[in-house]
Length: 257
Image 1 (cartoon, rainbow, N blue to C red):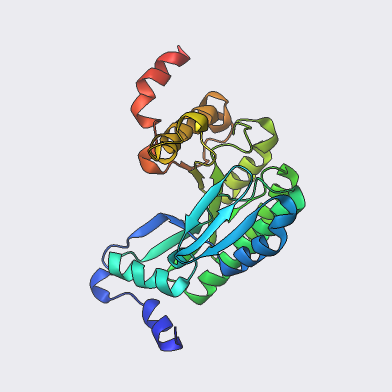
Image 2 (cartoon, rainbow, N blue to C red; image 1 turned 135 degrees about the vertical axis):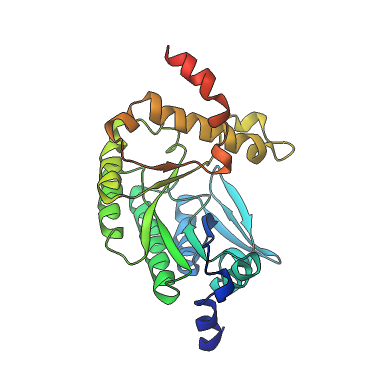
């Protein structure tokens, strides 16, 4: 994509300027992140496969396939223009970084956050970033949160519905939540390695049912576990229409009594 085209993408047509459409659920694999995953991932049992239609990424428990539109920012901008979306809040998706050793998880998180900041620098009107943190090592996650907060265009935090099976109300994560609240950062919550995976292998049920169920468990854990009482200004965004959570509020409320 040449410079003139890039500038055109940075200035959406005036007819769309009245209301801004911001997509907060916009997954992205930066090329630099993929290169790091491809080069160092095999030492930790992960690999990237380049296919005729794009890529397949594999860890011990997670497999995800995607095409070049999830990598190339030029293709993404063209798609955004077609869909009349002004801004993407970029986020990494499966396998995220929790599967890795703490050191490699930190390196992957830093590669993602730096790439998201660079995307914002290049297209400040079109992209912001949601920081990825190595939550399997909470001290490293807190340090990376503080570093990422100083990067241009990073506006929030991306968090899975659990961290390697550890629920989100676990006390080891609370310092991260406290810092996010202090920064005014929203948390975008997203399912990964979902509940009931052994029973949802057929019919795409791991996505169709596993994702909303996992979101419901995570949201309930944050509430029943006291996280949102401790940090009342912390904003948590639940994708997929809130998953199972909003539809079962009456049942959950009854459970508290």
